[in-house]
Length: 468
Figure 1 (cartoon, rainbow, N blue to C red):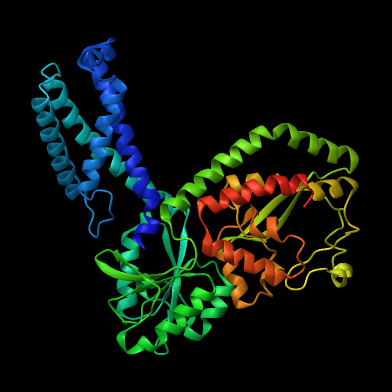
Figure 2: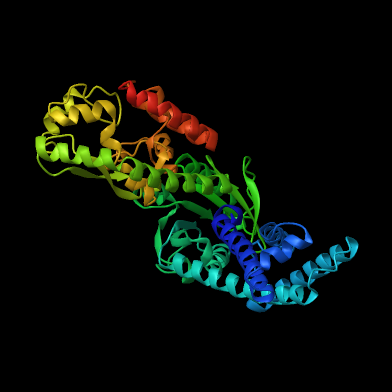
């Protein structure tokens, strides 16, 4: 649990510590040795920037070995200060030992003492500010993940309290599910009661729920497995603290969280660093796409305005990750009354299942037919990717009315952020079976990797050029 949600925080800490150490080395060198500080280091041996990078690497490695990048059950500034000072002492002993071993008397010992002392203070300040910043961001809803607590006894209360102690993880408790004996509407740290165990499917179908924590007492252990399997089939991550009921469930991963063991059941991508890289790729790719394609986007916008009139863009509510609604943005390809004419065209649907498509849609404008054929109408969705509502690669974002008709197994396709392109777009876009689309989406989710995303993106370009 900590490993997945703490990845962004841990990477931010490592980047902050490394960048701070590198810059501090350079700044202190300038102050100590003057404008020709780089020449001073060149006279000793390696380039100054290489030495600065080596110092940053040693500092981050030492902090890592001191477990300063792991989430702590009881974090305090005092404990952080002690560990940072201990790490600075270790680095000092190591560096002075290397200087003695390699007989490098030209390196200023005064400079090194200043470096280690200031680095310890800078690291403590930076990490404290970053931690408080993450907590403030999470409290305001930034990158929040919504957690449903199943249970209302001591185990549930204890787990909820642990979650609230680590607000930097971004887990927000939306409420709890009471057992048959539950009578109170509001239970302390658990929040509001949303229903009983029989209501779990309806709650998962009507609210944004990313994770479900099953915190039942030992005498309710029989309920754990069916609830866990139900939530898994719905595409939700399941967390089971092992200090209450002790279920015998296979396929999970044991993780440490705030001093207790948690059994995590995750169907789909659970590679925390790779998912972080995927988001970075989305940001870079969307930014570059919007910049590079801006002339084409402008020309298409002008053409639509001149030939078909306004508006240029079409916004439609779609369903994203775990039922999150968002407005997808596309170039307008249909007549202004397209939505009003939908009912009369439903019987001409060429798809079998919970989706709608026409081979020759009479609502398309002249420009719209060209844009649909080449998929150029999708390009404004790069904005949806940039703001985090979509990804470059992922399942197709469905309409709310389609999701309302989903079978349980269809819903797991909502467990990953929707994408502009995806596996079914390059393999089976003309397939009339909706279940086949969903099967490809689930195949993508289960086999996801950065390499698979790259292959799909590479296959998308020729598919667009070929009009497929």
